[in-house]
Image (cartoon, rainbow, N blue to C red; front, side, top):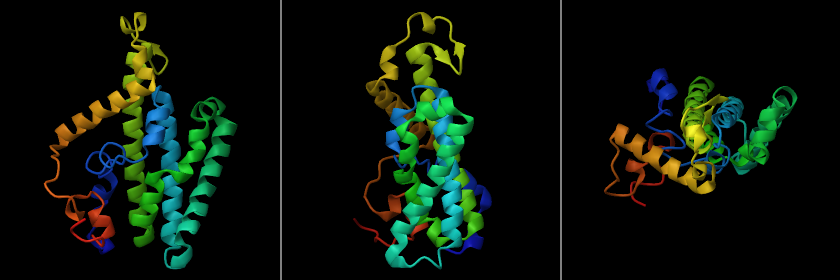
Length: 225
């Protein structure tokens, strides 16, 4: 699709609700469930992922006509891993407490489906400008999803939020919410709420026409599964 037909506002906002990578596309589930026991961890992981997504989208978009198709995927991995290493050094040097909290999940950003998916389906097919907007929009949606997850789990599971003690809840917190089962339950409830707000319904048929990625990939897989 021609780049000049894309609305900058739409590209920037599509990742918040309509194509939210976590709550709609169900990507990046590993960090979503693992680090969201606290709201601050969710913000940290979301911003770190946004940094990597933005950097890799810019580089991949700039080199999309140069990278040979046969080494496309290895090239994407090297580019993404470079930005992951950089953000790791920055967090370790300036925010060591957050670096320790995120642990191995920070390194696993390299194989995050959101990063690789946007590189393969968007940045490698569009110019730098629209790829920047796509990265910022998807990163914002991912960060908001993790922040919401972390807030709910932290408030209900520990009776605190961003360092503040929540009256009543802090006296008898529901520890289930800071455990894996609580993470799945919270995620399911938030996804249901988002679908309700967006008035999304299960597709009658499975195919490219019902896929949030259809516009980006051009429906090359065909209309039928």
